[in-house]
Length: 372
Image 1 (spheres, helix red, strand yellow):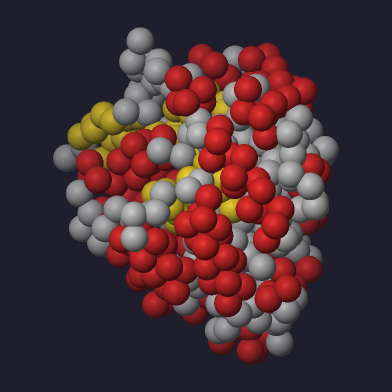
Image 2: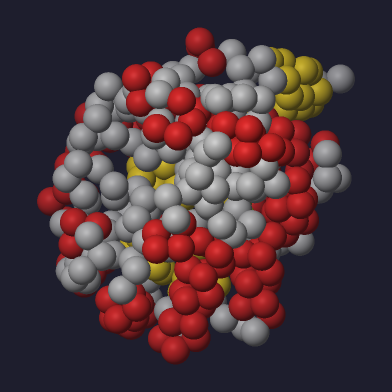
């Protein structure tokens, strides 16, 4: 029997729209259409556009593009801003001006701020502003050129392996700076059991540390990659079965929130084989059915707790200015009970880099009313 469940509007705090930069992969209009169809009341765009979003003017450009396509009437677009100028990791951006312009939080997503002194300065300044710093916790010096975790496919295809320490060294560094500065810290797209344990320990210590799990790291495992298919290539890479189990447990325990890391790419950039193709997949239109399947149906998570990982927990990393814009967002309504298959050909997104075509779920978003 079909039934509808109503929740406060879901927020995706990690999406990539390619405007400006690569509009053939995703425009603001197509991205917001995908978000609306996917059941999201608001999304936060990442600043790794071309040029990087490190100024109030570039934030204003993105918001203007959203207004032009009517984004404020369906899905609200919030903008994050760079930690460093140009996302180069060398010099802290003008965080004060970016905060005043309404940045949701600061991140160099897609790049790790490797210089400890730069990261500490950024977190000290962000703390004074009451802002959260979100980090793409992948230390490039430790990655050794890896593109995949150790698994049968990696060995069979002689793919360079990325060690777990790529993530854990970065998280450990970030937490140590959080401890010194008191700045709110959010770890993006966590992927390893060891990384989850670091976050758990930081939270037990009382530090203001949060983290997110993506639908693909919860649903997929490197042990199950079917072949040399770049739709399974992510940054960070998919973990093994143990990592996936620990991520699910951490979501169920309230340690991790959800975020999609929606990463559209033109077909040409995802058709070069696993080693050479771009990282990431689209996720806005499959996030609700996938996380319901993995967490509610497979792991027994209560629907209200599942929903909080999409609406309540994400609000905790937003700036007061960004949070205020969500006072009148539409509800997220899902219909549960009838099994339907993912049909990538019908997506609103301009990109098709998705491994879920044909997957079935019993939970799908439907149109929800505005709260005010």
